[in-house]
Image (cartoon, rainbow over all chains, first blue to last red; front, top):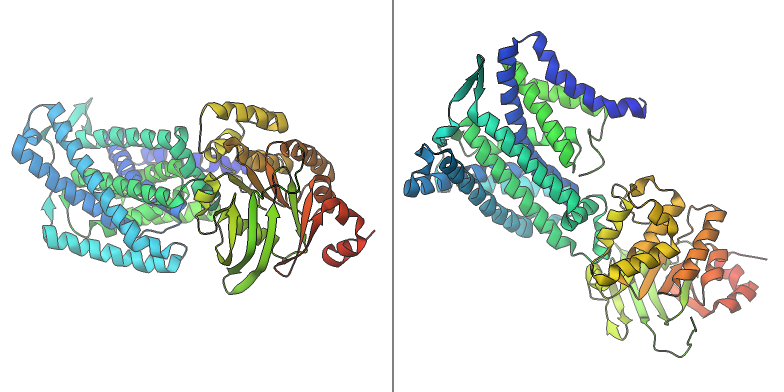
Length: 328
Length: 242
């Protein structure tokens, strides 16, 4: 395959995924499903970007990432309920107050799970840096422990995720049904992508992290305490998982202790498709997976997970290092 | 720069032993580096020259012996702490961040950005003018010689007192090596250099003092002019004749 064809490959795949369902779905339904697919993609991006960044920078395959996602959903759930009990902002007719309570819950989830991530990195991951086999064992162990802790603290049953009143329902634009929350999730996800991208591209810390993805040893001999950056990246990745968890729970309106195990499969697929360690790869991979999953779920519901696997196989057979192998 | 043979050593490596895994690589390496000089470490492949540099910068920990920078022990410090004391390192593989631009490579290398940084950058551009031309280019797109110049220039943004350079001529064409020698002659004016080099032409063009390595030990030392004249030593330890 020529390099020119390779550079066009991911664009062709993206366009094919985006437009081909128009042949089978009527345009109004297509728009509704597309928005849902983009929302799912943006939420997957939040989870997979943290996973991918941790792998790229620390070279750690953190299979406990899904459990951190679940912790984010549960902390978001409790924070929302607690703040709502005091203020009633979740049921207020004011869109501003709805947004404030929603963001406060997400920020609390992000901060507390970042702290949990720091503890996990220091106690669990640090002793096994450089050994992928032990990392897999130990992060699976951490995932089980974190999941069981959720069952102890919040109970084993499913919970209904509270949703701010103005986030519910849909708009009807020229007979096209546009759900409110998925549209908000797309905007919030895109803003977060821009924030992450700007930090990585425009700040010195971001530049050091990108350098560390390529050669952590050289970053050390240039006077930077690499372990402090390892902890920081792990905390940031965990916070992204938590924010993704909180937003995902609002999207599907329910939470349960094993929800992390389900999402980690998607996060892994997205990270591999995009190229491990690449933010742009994560966003492109997540949107591809989100869109293809939703289109196929509408046309052939039983094949929806299969299409993401097929996408993974096609992309890896042509670009084994993912769509954006050049890092962040 | 006038050499002072009786000056206090900037760096003193005293009987260091280093293991890589179970292999006892350095088995008693000792040498001194004096201000204003280029000290060249010479020896056959596997003699322990690169391991010595990696031990000085802290990437490997010595099991015995001491490393003193201006009489201060540094062998127990982490690489980032040693680097911040004023030691720059250019590894054999150059350690370039290929996916970052030339500018970003310098940004990562600089840990004390202040008013002097701009002045230092001007010095860097005087010595390596190509880097200014490719300032916004991805480092991975530079030629081999330009990458080597970037690798050598990066530590200069921190006003390092000592630069450890491992095999800078490796993989470069003879004409590029000549350019590199010219640049490094200018560099000698600003910083003390420990040079590991297999290319004897480059080593003898730049070096003031030399240490010969064999089987993880320093076996001979002296001034580079003496070594150039000493056919027996060159043949025995470097395999060079004539």
